[in-house]
Image (cartoon, rainbow, N blue to C red; front, side):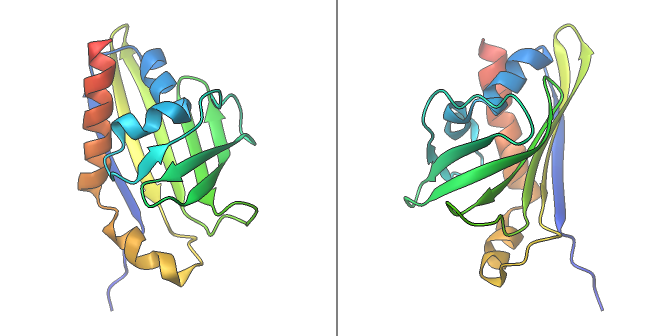
Length: 149
């Protein structure tokens, strides 16, 4: 019997300080610009995440709205959220970003998708389709934006 890996991760170094990279991640209105899953359509401006417990909304490319419940937050270093349908409990998957400053203009960025606690069986096929390559695509797009600024 094989055990399915329900934690997918990717990472790379980006030639930019951690602060500007983190700003691109923690501002939901910026997320569709770098989303490697091509799943995010838009988010209202003015939702910059500041703490665990914050909730931001996002409209997906197919028109659904998601509330994203921030469960981990350390300014400039770590942010993680659990998406849910509006007004409902999150079904158990988690998106996490971790940044490690390697110097004044180099940052190691790790992006993780963790669906070990996913309880909604209807979401499992989509969770399985979220591969390390898609996470890497998000990081690469994020790097392109951060290195241009």
